[in-house]
Image 1 (tube, rainbow, N blue to C red):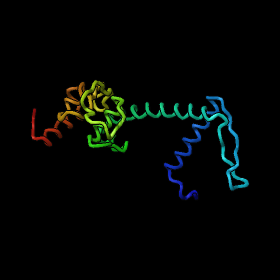
Image 2 (image 1 turned 90 degrees about the vertical axis):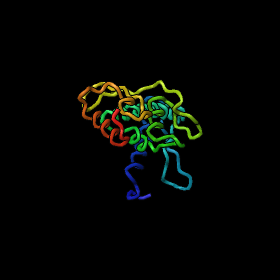
Image 3 (image 1 turned 135 degrees about the vertical axis):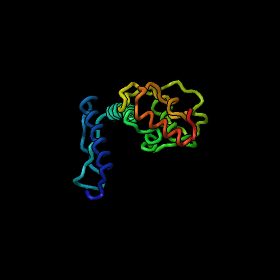
Amino acid sequence: MSTSDMTPTRAASGRIRELVRRIAVDVFGTSETDVPIPGFTIFTDRRLDDPLAGLRAALLMRLVAEAQLYDYARTARAAGRSWDQIGTVLGLPIGDAPVGEVAFDWLVCGRAPDPDREGMRSFRTSSAYWRCSTCGAQVTDDGPFESHPGDNETSHTDICTRHWAEVAAWAQRTGRTD
């Protein structure tokens, strides 16, 4: 592959792999060895002497990344992004459930998307909490499961223009005023 074939995503993936390898060496105490690549005389591949250290480093990376998914989703909600938008970025939906509901179930309730699981909404106890970037209130977000925005998000201030704009859009979309 030439350098012109290198996309930013592919380059970032390479940096992440290198970071996992560095963590395996620096944190989990393994070392690296250059191993000849079969069929080449001068090219080598770097290998960890203890692959379990690489496994530990990759697991640490995954746990941190999963926590970041939730943190960035919460920050996106605080910035006015919908659960549908978040789910779309995550490449959801899986199965027939609405994209926003699947994203909420995954990131807040801890239920990974499963195309074979029926009734993902049957029992829900989790909520997301974030600070509204418009009114500054700590908002409880119960997910995109109800029609009215006030049933999904509570604790916006009475003068929150973002929340009232969502309520006005809901009223226009549904023709309801309650």
